[in-house]
Image (cartoon, rainbow, N blue to C red; front, side, top):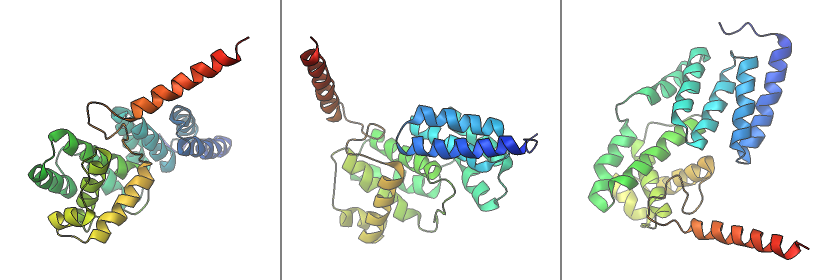
Length: 222
C-alpha cells in the first residue's frame, strides 16, 4: 500500500525527482528514468514522481512503460480533473481532437503515416504537459495546430491561415498552439519522432558529425 514510506525516504525521493527533471530537460532520458524510478520506489505515494516517470518514458517512445507509470499515477492522484484527463489515455476511442484529425487531414493530401504522426504528437503532448491545465473546449484549435506542425516537420508546410480555415478557427490559435507543441515536446526540424519520409535530412548531419569526430581522433593520434 502507498503512503508507508519513511520521512527520510520521502526527502531523498524529492531530491532524486528534482535531479531527474534536470536530466529530462537536457534529454538525458535514461538517467531521468533511473532517477524517477528510484524516487517512486522511495515514495510511491507522490503522484508527481509517477507522472514524471511517465513523461520520461513517453519521450523515449516506450508507451507500455508510460502506461504502467500512468496507472500508478492514477492510483495515487486525488485531483479528479487530472484523473479524468489521464484516464482518457487508456481509452481505445478517439477523442474530439483525434476525430477531427482523422476526418480532415485525409481531405488535404496527406497519407495515413502523417495522420498517425499527428495523433502520436497529441498523445505525447498530453503526457508531457504533466499537471498543467489543458483547455479541451476548442478541440479544433489543437487539431489545426497538430496538422500545421506535423506538416512543417514533413516538408508539407502550408500557410497557417489556410489550415485554420479547414478547422474553422483563427490563424492565431493555430500559431499559438503550434508554439506550445514545439516548446513542450522540444520539437526540432525533421524531428525523428514525427518525420515519416523515406530519408531524414538529419541523417546527413549525424553522419557529418561522426565523420568529423573520427577525423579529429585520427588527427590527434600520434
